[in-house]
Amino acid sequence: MFSTKIQGYELNRFTAQTLDQFKCDICQKVAREPIECQGAECGVLYCTSCHQASQNRGCIKCPSTQFGKITGALLRLYNNQQIRCSNASCLKPMNLCDIDQHEKICLRVKCLNHELCQEMAGATEPFKSMQICSNICKLTNQLWESAGDPKKQYLVLTQYFQQLKQELPIRQQEVQQTGSSITQFRWDPSKCGQGITLSNHDLSVFLKESAYMFRTVIAKEPFMSGVHYWEIEADNRTENELKIGVCQGNQINLNSAFCDTQNGFAYYGLAQLRNGSNASGATYGKRFKKEGILGVCLNMNAGTLSFAINGEFMGVAFRTEQLKKAPLYAAVALLHCAGCTLRVGMPKPNYME
Image (cartoon, rainbow, N blue to C red; front, side, top):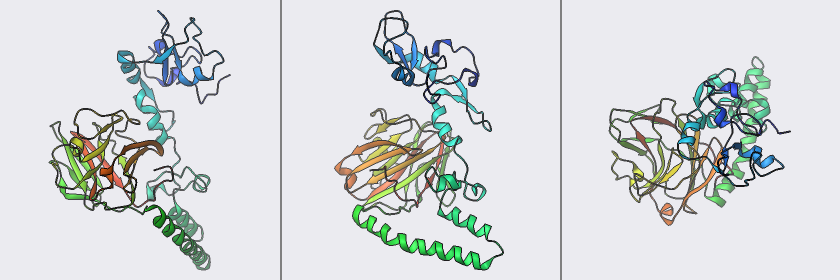
């Protein structure tokens, strides 16, 4: 027996039924992370996890023990299969290559105060069981529950501020030991490429034009030292992947991607890296375009730049002495029709280097 967590995708979730060529020969569902038997004239597909969990690591249709990921035209056809979200309140159809990232957000539970905070419930305790996103929402609920009882509200606020006083020395010690601090900045209205518009107190950026040229926007405040963490929230209107990272100095060509030169370091939403090139770079992480949260961590002590998607750490993208040299500016490059929202003010997650 195989756990449903490692099996393929249910056939009834797809908008088309021409799926036989993509069935896993073990679970009989559309293969998840498919691998193909390399035996002569075989080509049977398996879910990577189904094959790893099976007692027989060879092919069940031929003697071959050689397998590889699908590539080329078959991979493109697989990625473009239309599958519906498994969230019953969504059921949105999308490309198969995008579904896992979409569901990481869509299947999360909304914070009880979602109408106020627009956030999802935390993934760790105590926020997960309380179905809230933060201490602020916890305090909000406690004040609401004690409405009409000033003494109880006073006690709630007293306990909250006592907790803050206890946490402050610990946080200050962390900053002294690691150089990590709460990062605050906004995009610079005077440092935007042609056509980029800013909104939401200079936290949101959007570009829509007929041309297909990257345009860059950079932060108003530079990073001079230490460890900095911020997040980029995808805009569902985006049609073209973004380039996200940092650049040295702010005297750059804003009507091109900041990472076209050796002074720019970026994660490209096609699951690639860019530094000193507008056309090629190493493969890295997962794709990111119109859904999800991209975490960015700049460690100027170690000279590293790292990224995470929806809380999943993708590893160190760049490690170089250049990333130790101030001033460095957060930057985003947009193409044709794209946007995002900057999120700042949260501490660096422990999994980030």
